[in-house]
Length: 222
Image (tube, rainbow, N blue to C red; front, top):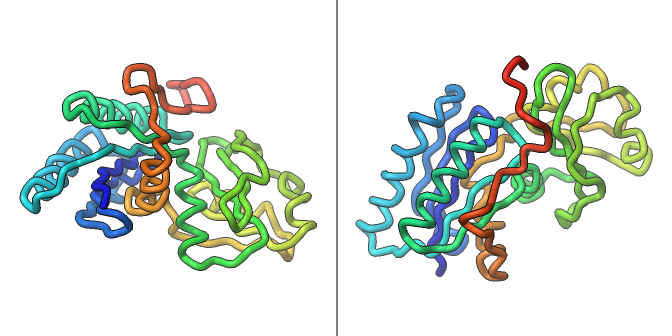
């Protein structure tokens, strides 16, 4: 089975997971806040040490590619690229909202559409809408949410809203087909299934030139 190291730093949660096939061999998560610069390298060292101690050879590194926190994404991608350079292994980049939607679907939430949301500060969210097969019904956009923003999807059936951006929409979206799920964060452990798929299909990124998907330009005043 392929041994893959997964890194997720797109939001305030910092997480690292080591997998062999669909099995998670090592998992570390921190929800305390944006302390990725301190924690990520420590988690990675522990995961790599675990792999070596149990005779596993890393075959790839997978990283959450955005959108999300500008600083968090930079830290995660820099760490992933450094590991790939040093170990001469391929880089896998998985869109952050895909990770969240995959987690919601695999957790058993039933809906006609799945709207993954990341808080983009102020009145905005980064959001994308998927079907049950994790196929995009609408690509990722920066939305200022009103009661009509997702009206076309809500008219077709139930829509599950989730992620840290969904909380700010709960009082705005009151349609009867709207369902809200709490505590769904993009996590390294939730990347495992997609990382294995990407690895099997050899969907790798150029280690030298890959950059995170920020969606919007960085604004230090926000």
